[in-house]
Image (cartoon, rainbow, N blue to C red; front, side, top):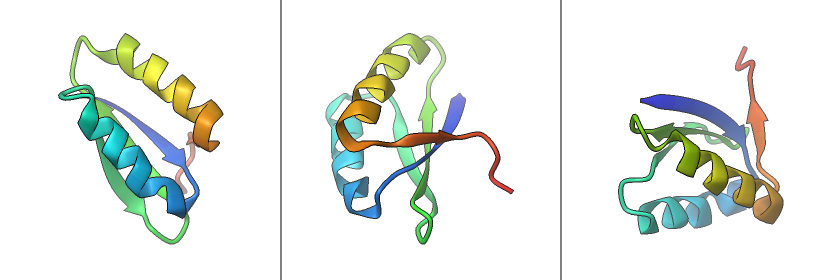
Length: 71
């Protein structure tokens, strides 16, 4: 699995999860830190390119930002 972390507005979490589930098998979304709005997006091998496109579209739409340092 290829895993990336993002900070999102907590109000957008349900929307993000809905979209991920609508793209059957594309990726999974898990909450890492509910208070800070940190989520983990995991993609199965071979779907990384599709997930990158999905993430780019969402970054523009809901303003999610990639988090590289969770400390």
